[in-house]
Length: 232
Image 1: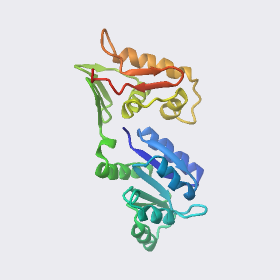
Image 2: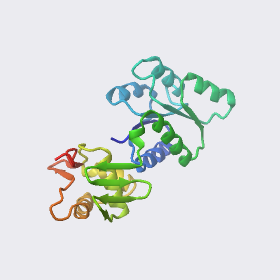
Image 3: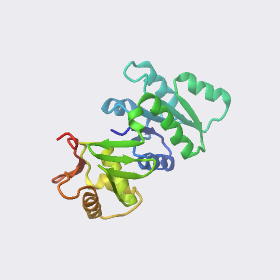
Image 4: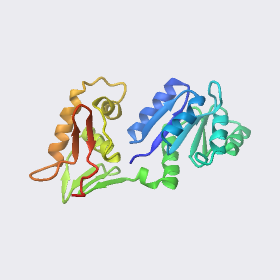
């Protein structure tokens, strides 16, 4: 399953920027602008990493970090702090509170993504694997190559991203709207029927002859990658 990242940021443009880029990398993203909501979100689903803004309305990011580190069940969740404060003393304060890393705004998105990958490789290496495999199906994120048994599967960029997202979360059912947001993006208007068209093309490319279809249609809900695929 792909890594889950919680973004705690009250500046909407930065929140949108982070969510879009993280989802494009295949992460599952939740976000909030309120420090007070973090404890509840973490209790609902423990994230693999938190991107936490220092300056939040109400409770500050520093205090959120301190509270998370004080509880046994959350003390080891990796935290990257974002802040406009560039002074060395402030960086030391953030790290001393328990943050794993620290980035000053304006920050480089590629650098932030690289730091996230580095931390996740250390604490949860399966979540950032370059290769996804299920049965005789293999997807390589670095080479952008998909193979089934001994043959190459030629996919469009959109079909590749769709398959990657489904394979990262086997068994999880995604609605058409969720797939549109993740694969096509929040700012692109595409009819939900487009998802059906791309899933149909993906199926034809993946399964030939008597090969088992790895994509499952859940009537009235959406699509999922069959978690039983390759186990039959």
